[in-house]
Amino acid sequence: MFSKYILMLSFLIKHFACWPSFLFFSQKNPVNYVLLNSQNIKQSGFDFSKETKFLIHGFTDDGLEEKFIKIKDSFIKSGFDGNIVSVDWEEGAKAPNYFSAAENVEITGTKLGEFIREVGINVSKVHCIGHSLGAHACGFAGKVIKLGRISGLDPAGPLFFNRKKERRLNENDADFVDNIHTDPTFGMHTPIGHLDFFPNGRTQPGCGLFDRSALESKIISIKLDPSFPEVKMIACSHNKATAYFAESIISDCRFHSVPCDDYDGFAKGRCQCDPKLGCASMGYFARKDFPEGTYYLDTHKHEPYCINQQN
Image (cartoon, rainbow, N blue to C red; front, side, top):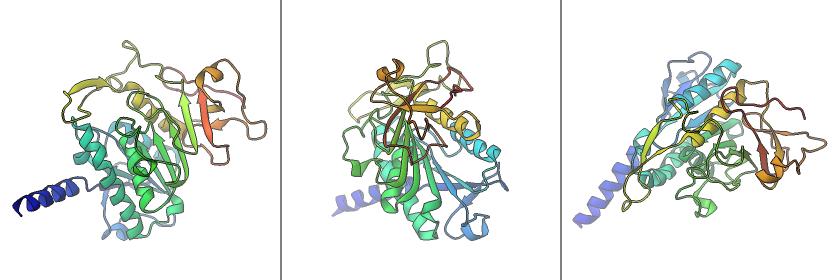
């Protein structure tokens, strides 16, 4: 009997540790967020008639992580006049226990989906943007209530490669699921959405030992299994997906991408853009009306990343 209580207490502690906080930004409060909940949302300035962008961080990060503040700031700079909500699940995403964070994703995403449903946000106007584990959190939110759009920024690969689609982000979680894949080590290097973009093929330019910025050189400590030793790794290519997306919001350059079966075919010029639709745009301006499949492009090593191409 006592062991049952211990297990229940352990479950409750984990459950509430993963309970996300919702940090609300808008054109009226672009810097100082409002901590959103179901009781104050109607008095917070949240506009139910407009689009809502949910931003979900990944492993080791928090809701005010620099990568996501940059995405938030890009929306503000672009003149986006809707709601921007950064989903903070820092306690559930803490290093080094990646295996634990990977399980906490489901709780975080489910709570977000329940929140959207409870307060009555129009799901057709919801765009969930998640990096790494955060991409799968978007997916779990979409399993509670199907969303309008999910953008996965290098969806996490370890412990998700072999999962059934019901336990990870997949194309059924939103009306439109677009993904940017930048790192075959930390990310999932297989298509899991409607449009899957693979810039530069696999690893990203600018991530060589002497090319990385201080932010890109950030070292993370990670344990993939309780029985494994902790290792230290640099996730430069993994983080490039957030940089590309942030730039795509405010750039006139559209990250034109070519449908192709693999990067080698793209690099050798064997693949062409659609004669009627032109080239697909990677990032914020990706569109559902392009054929489902994999798309390839090259980028610059440093900002601005987009290479100006013609359709």
